[in-house]
Image 1: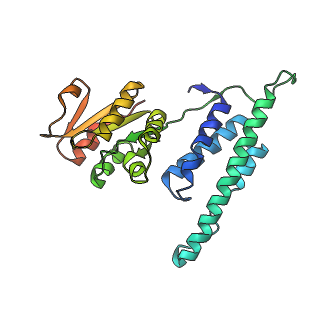
Image 2 (image 1 turned 180 degrees about the vertical axis):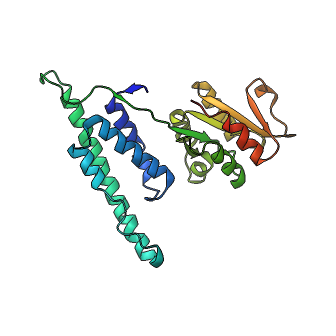
Length: 240
């Protein structure tokens, strides 16, 4: 298990904090982020620390009453979710401050670790050119249980994100999946070019019989016949 600087780990969680606002307490991406944050705080400070305990005390929802679900309950839970996210931000900023102060030359004995053993499975990028729900689900099925979280370029594009914002997401991802079959779209090609330019691993997929640009044929590609075939072939590509 690699050793990582807890300050960098906490900063990474803060960098993803904005993305959590559009989610809810039961969203898979939030649960993954929450689990990672909890583990980082425990490793950096211990389970008895004030930072860890304050984080653990946050509920992110006011009530769970499935039998009486209503828009009012949803609103109450959404308000609590946002409020607790603000609290998380304060906790993480306070944690960074303590770790930073603990490393100053004025302290004779350092009480927090400079490095902790931690593995972030991370995220993978699904290009904006991949829009078909069944195709997206086939990709997600391939990486289910790996701890990897998908970033959907299609959703980012529909929300009005600029290309440079999606490139930031590509930078953060461990690898990206690109389908260039719909050749009339230029943005997936730009995303692919950006990924290659910054040295990211790319996985090109295309349905059997679909044409693909000549200038990318030297790159590794996965040809699939149907969605289950794609899932099986992608499953063999899960990065270690």
